[in-house]
Image 1 (tube, chains in turn cyan, yellow):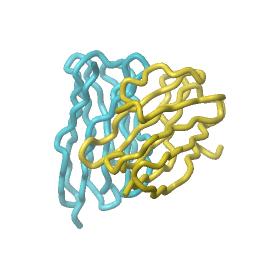
Image 2 (image 1 turned 90 degrees about the vertical axis):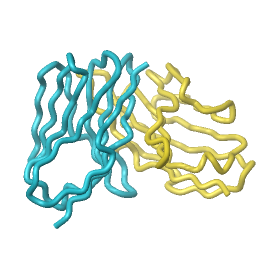
Image 3 (image 1 turned 135 degrees about the vertical axis):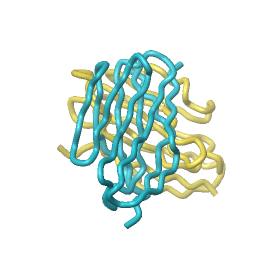
Image 4 (image 1 turned 90 degrees about the horizontal axis):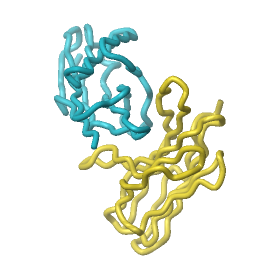
Length: 109
Length: 114
């Protein structure tokens, strides 16, 4: 059964700093997703990673996938307050999509 | 494209009552998922459908929960009887299989059972 673990679960950081959120999954997953959720809102898709070594970037966010290590990372560059949100990774296996617990990111001005 | 539409947005009910949550997926999407979100347990997959057929309902917590998808444009999640521990935000999401596209989530239904 696919299990997805994120760390850290909470992160408070200063504007302008860089940081990385880690997402480990327990068994073979043929795709990895990253989502963002603002408080009281729905989930918004950020990235879909389909193959080993895949890297995608959008603004200050960059996601990568290492299928051999069963690890995906979401890197935040020069954080700004607008990036404060909860970030989820999710793994896909046999059509099931299983989410991690989320990382609540708070960026301090 | 109107996106995934869920109703109602908020539901407050008393323990023991029947609750029905509704979802209209994006036209052309062939997968539909129901998730439940709580602070303690995060996002839990309850059930998912492919081409209107339930594929995996192993996440449905108890027999009190049931889900149907009578056609490609409508799904329901029913709880009967409801209990306070069912209080959560319930999300419906849809996707299509081509290219492993992402899930598109509805705005969710916030359920409170008193």
